[in-house]
Image (cartoon, rainbow, N blue to C red; front, side, top):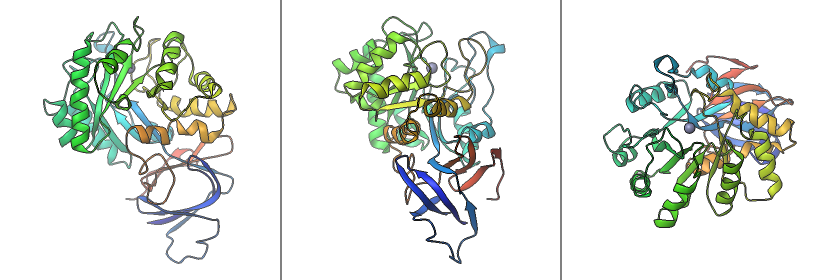
Length: 373
Ligand code: ZN
């Protein structure tokens, strides 16, 4: 299938003006001045994007695809996420992970769900492990998971500063991270340790100790939920200023909502390339209920509409920055020739109108569509 998205205002995510985007199968073939392919006889489809904006599809690095929860007993377990909910949130790439419960939910379950999502056109990766030590894995070894299983790009969410964590020591966390680092190197992957921060006293303290006492690279760690408390957020800003990645959680209402946190970060003048936002969706939320993946899109939209953050800045946190940290860039996280055709098309009110996942259209006019493949 050769398709042309005609006259879309392109954010790659940097602003590049009105363009025609030529899609060949699952890739972006080229991005050209409007009208270049007007009379091309090879086009199977022309999609008019007049008045619409094209962004890279969102990348969500924290999704409980087989459901989180379980903290309040069996009835609080949450089920699998639906592909349609992912599409409607503009997400085209995600990382699935286990949470607190790694007994009744396991990595094999997670792997099967990721594979099923891939069949819909989505790109799904995995973190091995869960909250607790010893880490759950597919092959009885985190190192082997990273080397042998294509989808595994790190471990997570490893809990620290939380009464529900295994209370790991510096050496336990360092030993885990060294296996992830080695596995990432041999497997040609990012090798990320995605760290859940709870409301515990020390915040990022344990992670800082690991970095101080070992030679592990700072860029392999992604601490998340850093906007859950003001003190933690302040600590996280300092951590980011000295070279660390930080990940904000969408849908936060008790701590600092993402639009407020992003406004503070932008106004600080600091380098924002290591800042990301993820949804923590399909897990339980402290106030009860299930976290919605849509909150990721809504918070980015809120940054633009409520805080006046430029769209090219707001979208970096869920596209380019994530792709670079997860070493998926430039195949993911950008609109450019050769990248996967993961494209979110929005109207002037920043509502999702169309979505393409590896060239396959999954949303049209704000509704899920099933295209032939
Ligand atoms: Zn978490």
